[in-house]
Length: 428
Image (cartoon, rainbow, N blue to C red):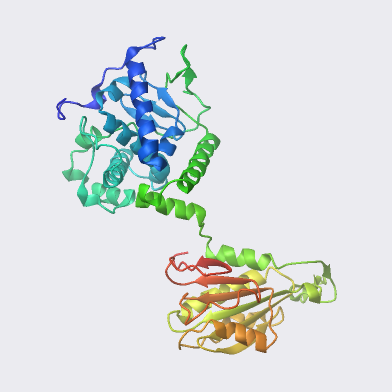
């Protein structure tokens, strides 16, 4: 078939469904065979494709589509394609689900048409790069080597900037599939039903509630992790690997990690033995925590040169805000490079001086200096928090001495060998 004349948007749709339709039998066999080949050759794509039940959607769909739960297809369209192109098409739908293009587009308030085009450029590029099936040429498909390494958002921005020079309608006609619009809430209408032969058919476009959509997204993530554990890393596009890494190594905002780490040290009961500073200027004597239940943390600031005073001050401000949630606490603070200095201790009685703490330093970096200092001065806090660029001279310290939290101002490729960690983000 001539590529220029095979416009998939003009396929004539049948009216209603037949009990047995030769055209549909042929399409289902082709798709089933394609999935088996995917499982044998590219197990990750095959596993992700197999989790999507096949649904005939001749009544409303001109090409193919997915809502993350099913693989919808038009039998005429499927029968137009060659066997290797069926594999490519499955890969196309799998990546739309995994990359969550629709959700990202809506979040950024993109123009739907341009967003769909940008998404197809990225998906087709990744499939071509990873040699998943045969790139579809039976019908037009979007591909441009200029977008190598681009995210969907970056492709969208370039399309948007050049919209007046682009034939948008021509690009729309090169979309391989129908990008299902999730606008509005539904009640599960359009749900596939079994025909007389036990095959799934859909008479109308699917529509889900907000809760149902979230459930589908959660199922995709679960399937993504499970399939990745049994597949070779080389089978997955770089974008998929990044998503899996984010799912299996979640990044908690550093403020949230600090708050959670400090909150978790709280123990025990209250008494009037230690009066809270918050009650000094009121008629009410507020209870403080008993001495043995006082929140006790240590904070070390890596001032080896890569962390500015401004960043250090923000760290101190964040810690002060957290500590003031408690009636009684002790915060031991010092700076370090190759040694520790300017040690001070803060309690509710002098917390107002916390943010005027003098941050000094600028030498090399020896993380072990902190543990040496704590041991020599008999400091064993409930939680030790180190704010650092993540580049120790030698070791990261003593993992067995106390619970440790690292807040890293540096590359997210840096992973401490022990303790909890988060990355400092200047934009938040």
